[in-house]
Amino acid sequence: AQSVTQLDSQVPVFEEAPVELRCNYSSSVSVYLFWYVQYPNQGLQLLLKYLSGSTLVKGINGFEAEFNKSQTSFHLRKPSVHISDTAEYFCAVISGTGTASKLTFGTGTRLQVTL
Amino acid sequence: KAGVTQTPRYLIKTRGQQVTLSCSPISGHRSVSWYQQTPGQGLQFLFEYFSETQRNKGNFPGRFSGRQFSNSRSEMNVSTLELGDSALYLCASCRDGSYEQYFGPGTRLTVT
Image 1 (cartoon, rainbow over the protein chains, first blue to last red):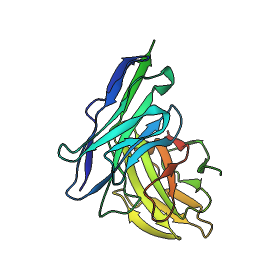
Image 2: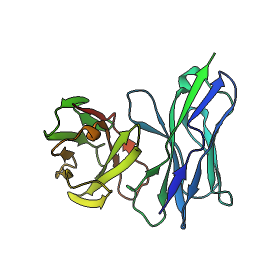
Image 3: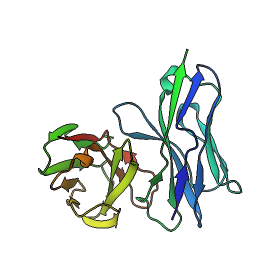
Image 4: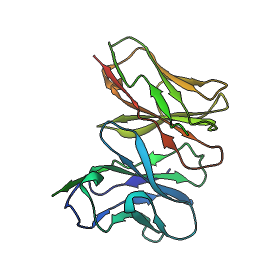
């Protein structure tokens, strides 16, 4: 079975600083990887996804992530964060043998951006 | 295009009661999945419906059930509520063959 580990439960960062949110996955088969963001009292919004092809994927709001198969990682990065990026970020995986619905989520990383 | 809608947004129930939550997917999406989100357990998959049939199921007790109608709208039901059922219940819809799930705002259920 697949699993996702988000190594940091909280990441404090100053506005305009770069940030990296870490995600590692385990799966014995090919995977599809996702990052979702959740703002307070809201549902999840898809930031970006890796299905195949280029290992560097760009998403909305200036975020990008790199799929690294040898390190089984899919870290999320942004070169310069804004106060409005304060939210909970979830990494998720679907195994290649699963259906679209079987998203397995990490425990989330709370990004706190301050002035 | 309208997003995924969930009703009600907030709900307070008493232990032992039952509750029904509703989800309307994005037009054209036939797959609807349900997730439970709690501080302790995080986001957990409940079940998925496609064309009125349950296609996948997570590891939840039989008190949790769902159904899907011909217009793809879905409901989930929780019977004999327990305090531990207090959570944010999220619904997501997806086009057939896609891996992108679109989430609704959730229903926050509080069991007292």
